[in-house]
Image (tube, rainbow, N blue to C red; front, side, top):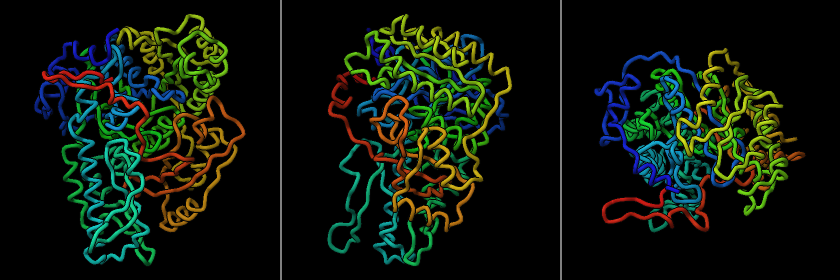
Length: 549
């Protein structure tokens, strides 16, 4: 069996200018990064008339369940049905690429290419965001060193440094050591969890980006007054570091169809959606836009729907819940060595996890489809069990073999999507932006996670009081919690009942325009696994990369 990277390297690619023509993009609107990728610099006014299809999932195994593969397969299938389509995705982070999960460009015959470039440095967007983040950090410490004219209380600084790599040793650090320096405790987050990444993905344009960067709440003064990035006179400098990154990236699927990839926040510790600029541009360029939101629907989809759609004035036309036999068995507490063997007992036990995700998505949108991402070891009995179960819930069910067959493997799913897109969709977020912060958190916890109650630790209570004192209103919440469970405990699989979730901290991201609630023991700087993906990676003297997946 060929590996993902072998398939990608052997597939002939179209020149990016020909890919652009499929969406009516002129060559003058492209800023080339070689022959296979380009930045889009489109100044025309486009009507956002495309149909928006969101691909989400159930709670995953540690290896992911193929939302990106599914999204690409759907887009390629829609093209086979003569529908002008673009798949719009997030940029992969180097942390998981070299860690446990590997790359994030799809798999098998449903990939975006050049997969090596996209999974590695791509067009440098995430590096630019990292540099922007750390320039602000350097400016904060320089201000303290140079006399602290703003009277910043160093114990109140809540803007951490960032890097795009999993490095648990940087979760807690001390900066400013040495003679004549200003020593203080600090930390690192992975770049894709930084507020700069969130701002980047929610900004409307360069002007809005600059305003949001200036509005970052970096600390409080010794008198308890808020101190913002603009008080350091740095908003312009931060913006210029992102002047090129803010332009979306155009690449292609293995079948030569357009893919726009831009922005990359994680969904467990950030808001999990590609940039608003890319989504809106896609809706103006194509009749169908297929996008994904990270991890299960309790994280990525909830944030896409409650946060991104409300802030960006978007409305989903169809939600596809991607599921695998493997993930359902995993949620049924199936031993790892049994996951690829036929076993209806664990499947029957774990399918309750799928039920919750279906029910939750139906609360928000009337057009929900379940799609089984087919693995070659899945048996007919297992597939039919899932099909019958889902159909009894009154939800359309389709099997996709996009991994093995590309667009051809998702034709029936694509036809279902087209059918539903011809009907009017309904959209009802879980909460209204007008509700108070605590109400929003508790609505998500009780209606999406199915928690009995929400417990707030003292630090969270104190920070919530500070936020309320600032007069913060009409902002969404972004909940950071484990992706492996509906609860905040990664060990509670399936459909846990009779549990509480614990908010240990709350932070106001004034630039991004939302409040983050940290639940359980979630970390904003991941660590590497015992056997990281980098151990299998290599490059030969001719520049051919192997082991990247």
